[in-house]
Every structure is written in structure tokens, then in C-alpha cells.
Length: 484
Image (cartoon, rainbow, N blue to C red; front, side, top):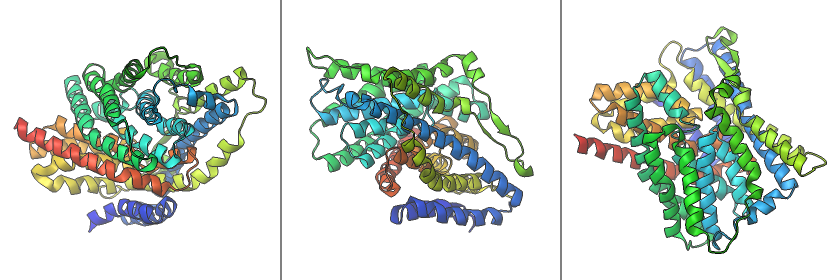
């Protein structure tokens, strides 16, 4: 009975989101999870501490949405978005091929540079400007982001989510990284096939499927190789190599590409990447507004405002406004989104934090979920990715999913006599894929793209995510059987 109750918030979120919409789903599930929180033995101080942590997390996400919409509004106001949409017209006559080039390349690049849900805040707006429907654009970007979030921002999910807390050796980290990259590359074909189906259903029959598969190969081959050499930069360098190879391969003779409208996004990428590459700058920006013992609950909360993509977004936007001599800054639209986003985002964050912090007198709800799946014996590798998916669905982060479930995955693997690096790779794959259905990401990306129907996005991303997780689990099981 306890296991079913631990699963109840997730079941309610998915079922009500798909039938009634995300807003009623998060409100109902939040109320139910609050009741379960007290049933689990937590008290009033723990509830207040959890609400405070949830508020800090919500503010962090809202800042990203605000910054992304502000930059886009400035670029649209100055005419740069119009120029940007036509800048690659001469690369290839097919608009659908340009769609996939930007969707794959830019999603991977901004995920590898910044993480924090940044691809969902940037790339859909560019695809919408190209003439593609908003729900389709957000759905495709979130699904593709699920393939590239394994290494997140400069390897954070692996280094901070697995290596440090589990005290893994460098050789183990490399094995996990390469295994995860290979599993993602193969399981990602399931995602790609369903993305092609989504686009074909929205835009009509696709004429460039072989070229899209080539684009996929252009990024996945270097991605897997770099996962062994430099896992921290596998996504960034893989994206850059893919974009370069695509331009060289598809560019028609005698054509010129106008890359000037892309300069603001290039500047944004540089600002996001510099702290990752320069330790002194990273240390200078690492100041945290921390609360060690919120309301006497023992729950810690904090926010690192200087590390948020918000400041780079604003800096680039102000730079564009200055260079283009904009008289007035477009603030109404970015600020107007914040209230409507908060109403849906805050309760969804509360649900996650309630589940994580419910373990006061017994294991937390997420602990029971991990224990539930650990009873599957030798079939465990098939289901290991789903633990990662659930972790990201609950927490909104590949890194936090690894932190929450990595240790239990490792212990279960040891108890069952299964290779721990393989199981941790499956956890990493699932945690990455989960970004496509995480409500935090859906709400933030949909809000940036001015979508009110969050349900439509989740309906597009849920099945591909679950099928890809199943494919990864079956591959992991096959790997285990072959290796003996």
C-alpha cells in the first residue's frame, strides 16, 4: 500500500495532465502530495521548509524564462529575428531540413553550454520564427534535449550527480559516460523516428528523411567518441562539429550565408561558456544565497543568481538594444508572462520537493519508488532507465535525478550481481530522457513560446520518452547477457 501511495502523485500528474490539462493536474497532485507528506510523518516546520525551497527553485526557473523572452523580444523589436529566419535560406531549399539542422544542432549546443532548460527557452522561438507551429517546435526541442542532457552543462550530471557523491574513479566515470552515449545514440533513433512522425503529421509528408538521418549521424558519432575523450565537452563539441559538417555538406556552390543575425546568440553562448572554462571566473560567480536550516526543519535551500543564464540573457539583450539604438525596451510581454507561469510552475515544484523531503520518520516517497523497482531481480536493467526518468520528472534536473537515485541504483546493482557502471549508465540515460516530460521544462518552454495548452506538449513527448527508455533498458539487458 505504501508503494502505491508513493507512486500516486506521479500517476495523478500524468493522468490529469493528459485528460484535463497541466494546471488542474499540478493543483490536485499538490494537494494530495501535501496530505501524503504529513502521512509520511513530516511536520509543519518541514512543510514550511519545503515550500521555501520550492519558492527558490521557482524563482530560478522564472528568471530564465524572463531573460529568454526579454532577449527574443528585443531581437524581434529590432528586426533581427526576421533577418535570422532568412539567414540560412541559401544553405538548402528545404525548410524542413533547416528545421532539423537548427533543432538538433542548437538544442545540443545550448544544453552543453548552459543546461538549466536553456534550449527550451531559446530554440523553439527560432523554429517558430521559421514558420513552424509552436506546440510542434517546443515538443521537438524537448524531445531532442532529452538526448543531450546526459552531460548537461559541461558534464555536470556525471561529475556532480554521480562521480562526487558515489566516489567513482575516473575510469568508471569514462565507462559510464561512453555506455550512456552509445545507449542514447541507439535509443535516440526511437525518439528521432517519432519526431519525424510528429513533423510529418503537422507539416505534411517529409521529403528529406535520409538527410535528417545524416544530420543525426553527424552529431551522434562525435558525441560518442567525445564521451570517452572529454565527457564535459562532448555535447558542445559534438554540436559544433555537427553544424560545421552540415554546412559543408549541404551548402550549395556559390551561395553565401548571412551569419550576422546570429551574433547575439553567439555572444550569449560565449557568456554562458566562459565561466565553465575559466575556473577563477566560475569561482567568482559561485556566490550562493543560502539558507541552511529553513524554519528549523534541517532542510537547506539556496540560489546562485550569478550562475543563472538570466544575466547573460539580459546583458546580450541590452547590448542588442544599444547597438540597434532601440528607444524603449519591450518589457511588458516578458513581465506579463511571469504571473501566469508562477501559478502552474510553483505547485509542480512543490510536489517534487514534498516527495523528496518526505523522509523524516521513514524513507521518502522517492526512496520507496526506488525500492519498488529494485525488487525486479535480473530484469532490473530493463527498468533502471525508468528510475532516471521518474527522477527527472519529479525534480526537473538530470543532475538531481542522479543525486537522488544514483546511490540506490548502485547498491541494487551490487546486490543483484549486475555491473554497477552499466546500471549507472542506464540511470543517466533515463535521467536525460526525462527532460522531455519534466513539467518544469514543459511549463517554462511553453510559456516562452506563448503556449497555453501544456497538455498538448506532454501528449507529444510522453510516448517517445517511455519508448526510448524501454529501448535503452532492453539494450542494457542485451549488453548484460552478451557480456555474461
